[in-house]
Image 1 (cartoon, helix red, strand yellow):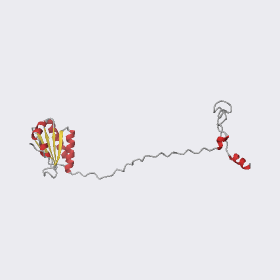
Image 2 (image 1 turned 60 degrees about the horizontal axis):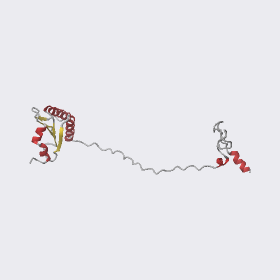
Image 3 (image 1 turned 180 degrees about the vertical axis):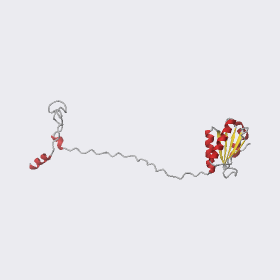
Image 4 (image 1 turned 90 degrees about the vertical axis):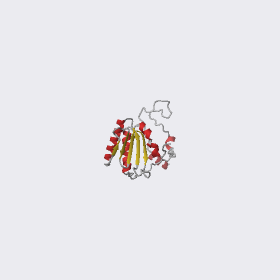
Amino acid sequence: MANLKKKTATKAKAPRPPLGGRGIGVRGAVGSHPRSTGNTASNRSVKKPAAKKSVAAKKPVAKKAPAKKTAPKLQGIPEQLLAAALKVLDERQAEEIVTVPLAGRSSIADYLIIASGRAGRQIVAIADHLREAFFKLGVRHIRVEGQGDANWVLIDAGDVIIHLFRPEVRRYYDLDAMWKGKGRG
């Protein structure tokens, strides 16, 4: 009996809720008395087992590989000229742009670009912008032929040659087929 008294003496009493906490109900029902905590003697002595946290199967998250730091592609002068020419042609709304790589096929240039303009004034303006772009890249000997009548303007920047045509003149000379290896009939 002495052991039983020690256990009850060490047990702390549960705090009581404030008056008027649990509503007024039928006498004797759990929680019906204003000072009742809803805990009976049987409820206090039984410990509820701790709920096990369910470990849901986690989907493997694909980790992104760290971005490889690759050295920037070294562009030679021909590739820089090609990129600048294509940018100008796109900005100035040239039509039907065809690029023919000539490296290994011809010694005259590394790239040949054939494009069309809608009118003579547009072709002359594109030629002027191409000359400025090549000049900014350090090319000093740029030859421009045919700006007077603007039917066919040739811009020769050494490694890149650009032919600008009016649409009907381009169809007549058909340089696309010649350089692509199809040839005329």
